[in-house]
Image (cartoon, rainbow, N blue to C red):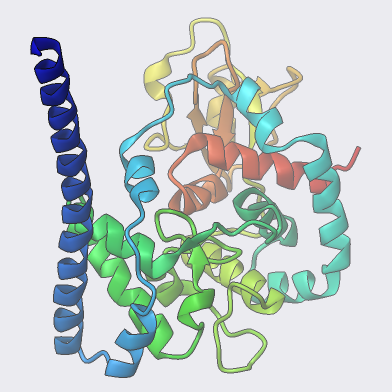
Length: 330
């Protein structure tokens, strides 16, 4: 009887745990639903139409995965020597050349108009979304609403959500086609909604800034972004260099700018050991993403522009490397 009683008690306890877990899960969904309704009320006060809100939130859902990805950082340590072969494998370099040739006329037209070398447009396109083939499988309104609801960066994600609603209300994209990353980066350029508002271009003249499906809009929007943050079409992005023994690493970093001749006088050379170009119209920074034993770059103005796009030295190195592979095919 005692054993039977204990077994019954254990089963009852497990059942309570199961009910409790279920209730907790339901509670999150209920709180999220309440949060959505509060957002819609706030949006009405910001002059968004009922039609826009009805369409935008028709299938809104809580993305637990988006919260997990926002909270968790990769545990493994990469260096540029291990990262670059993954970010720019040989097949991607070959595909970049194919895409460049496929869209050459359009790319050159856009590049000339915005003052951006076409190879960088293609390189960004390739690194961000594999030339538009993967733009993320998340519903942008749901992702932004989820991350605002999570609360850790509510103000930022609410601001992005308002921009997303504006994009929908202005007719640039239907909500069900507004796909992007878990963080809300959208389309083939992976623009956050705020970047879309500032830099997206209707280059094909159809009345919509379509960074999801229009190559003219995709390329022009990317070029417009770069042009707006200080891009120069008379220089490259940077170059891999060698540092002399005993180099003062306190001189490294994007805040320190020197002419190429000044870096040369400090013993910095091209990667092959030859002298740096004799151009006093170029200022550059020494960038050491890992340590002095790893890759070292002289970063030109366009390196800074790419850092505006994504504040990761690894990202910039990948874009720069892919652009070099387009310029100097093997």
